Length: 201
Image 1 (cartoon, rainbow, N blue to C red):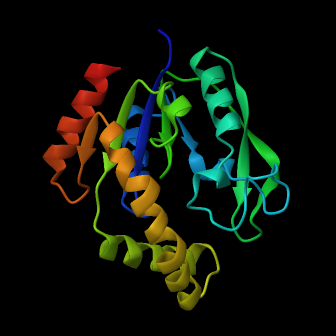
Image 2: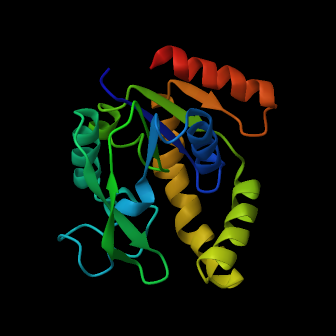
């Protein structure tokens, strides 16, 4: 069977990555692989003219051409060398990750449903809803712990970039989702979602 692509979107720290990994764990690595949008950011200072920049919540920060090309390769049964991104330095890593095609390809990212060429490659799309207060609290904890940020810098980035870009680009993309889910829903809701995924792929 031709590999199927499932896009999982939602605001920053909405729970989309947790949902992505929950689906991955259920399917297993023999049937599933993950393509994180976050690994396709342009590096600061090495992006094409008009792309990249310090606002990582804007669509121009993402190399969608490469993401679409590599997703198309996986869907056609070809292996890829997936880029890896280093958040502390804001640059792609020198090494890549050899990624083999699997029956299910999960694409995880806040901006994937606003990009029409990428949407056209998806066989199923999911949007994870979450209020901004919860998303900010999660982002504060994550960025301080994992990315070496200060609480003040996280607050400023959320107020000046994350929040405005969510309202402008992420939230409107929800209309393109086949399924909208709230991560606070009970375990039975996940079972229903997983059953829909299996039925539609």
